[in-house]
Image (cartoon, rainbow, N blue to C red; front, top):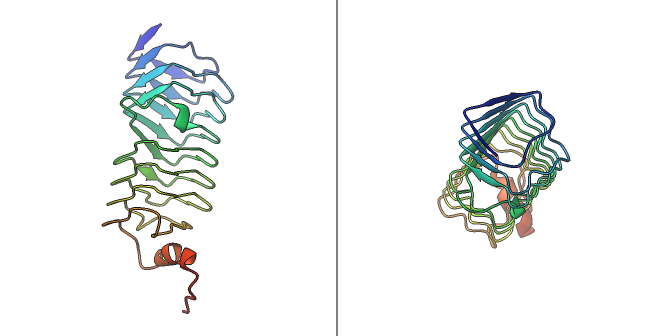
Length: 184
């Protein structure tokens, strides 16, 4: 099924299909199968997609605002045209393993225990986001902006950080893995 320019409010079930330029507001899709659906130029507002099955799902120019996205395995979503932005979202325990997230925005998000292993996050923005226990391992973080991010730990020895931005206070998150003592 194909859906164009439609608004879905307080919906709990979604047909597998292609959704283009659609808006989803206050919907609860937690633990639901989204497998092989396609979302193009769509917006999700105040929706719950926690633990939804998104294997093979395409997210192309999709914006999530104030959504709960706990435990989503983005690593299994469709790579073709993958482009997402998040604002005020909870993405705890989600996995972006090997995802291409160039210029992705994570604004005021909770990214606790989120896995960014081998993700391409060049020019990504993490303003106001908490990255407590988030994993960055062999990640491409060139020109990424962590200047207003909180609670991150990134080992500069096994991540690409050329021209990445950090605040002075954020330097602790870069140095913690080097077994050095920082004194105030």
